[in-house]
Length: 179
Length: 432
Ligand SMILES: [Cu+2]
Image (cartoon, rainbow over all chains, first blue to last red; front, side, top):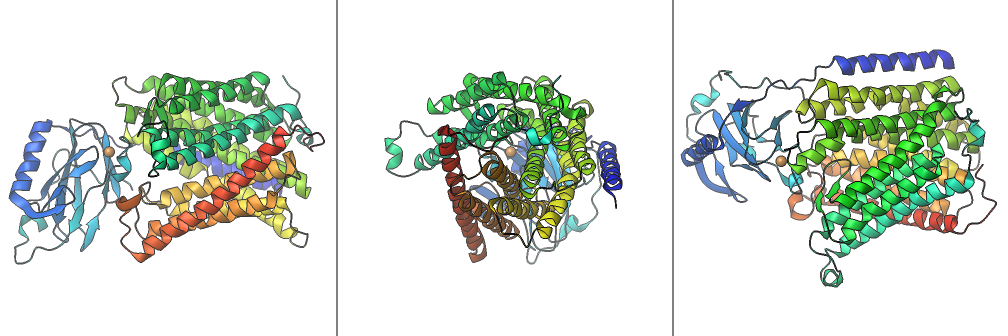
């Protein structure tokens, strides 16, 4: 190919790539559900009281959520509490930022956590292992170590309850975003 | 309106080039001293002898990053663009102001992406002067977009990219709500323009490849129309970047993702095309004796290519992110070191040694980070936080450390030899 036609190819590819970039929707239209910190904290505490395994993950209690609704509070620089999910279970992960803007990179998606606005992310637990939960928005010097703990393991001798049933995708539930 | 410059008569003024290089390499030297001090500030016993408080580690880290990235690359741009005296004075004054607050133990440090900051008026004045110096040099270069010659066109594209980055910083500053927490404010203030400056860095890499090949191999990596096309392609994405500020609000996730997508789509093709041309040129010259120029170009291609491959496996938050980023920047640095050592200041002592050490150290460093990332070590953490619970992870982080140390040694030799050379005021350098 001549230098001229290669140049035209490069420029045509650039126009196509620029068009792709412009056409890609800016996305993230969801602002979240207005929620007070007191209300959310009460839900976290109720979940901890009902599902505390007695184990600790660092400073955090390790909780086996009793229902499909899981409440995790984000603050500098932790996600509280640590949770253990049933393999294959369908969950709604509710997240709220306590102090400043954080984000939750949860599995393959990410949502921004603005104080006062709760985000709900549907999550199907894998068969084993853990699910990544990490803050993706710089929030201060401790930001690099701001990650949560979502482990997956079966609870012996217990019915797998309603968790394995379908989850109603209600108001405020995110559609899984593009990775 | 300056007349279009012939590519073989750039840079114009040897003396001005010398001062820009002094600023660029001096910034690296200062960054190196700060790196040493910040390590000492965490060393038992020694830390008691230093006059600074406990926040010095992060303050010094902030200034280290700003000097070794922003000041270094913008001064290099000033050098290749032949920036004028006012631009040089502003940029130099800016660099000095950036260092002062950390030495005075002042300013809350923020390690946000791209341009970390110290919350202190002198530091911000330093950033403003640095930006003003770069803007002046850029304004002087932009009219060369009309030049039929590839190199002036490339330099003018870099100038326009600098202006696009500065526009992004300004738009962000204007749009971010006043009540935003400092961490998020600085993160979002520098997010967009910081991305555009990566386009500038890629252009500097390609300018160095082109210049080096033309001067040392007697042939450019690509024919003139294709050279212009690959720079125009990068410039198109830099010019489109400010549009993001009209499409989404700065604090939103979509804003962050739009800039990530901009680089994903806009950055790979142009260096891939020129890298291909350069690899072909190296292959055609395989019978000829190897030189410092060949070494710089080959190592730059290898390290930049490694970074590109790592980029395709980029995770949101494990060590592959720095692997990718370090390797890309390492590849840019190798090309620029080659340009300085073989075109601007040929016959500088230990040129091949510093290129070998810096290049192979970067290769090891990036490979180690990539292995560690594949084994699941989170990025940007140190010590116990890394969860180094397997032999594989430990070995990988050991490779990172050894590679980093070798690269730093190469960098120190480069800075020391080039600074010595620049300060000798000798004549007869082949600068024109
Ligand atoms: Cu955070």
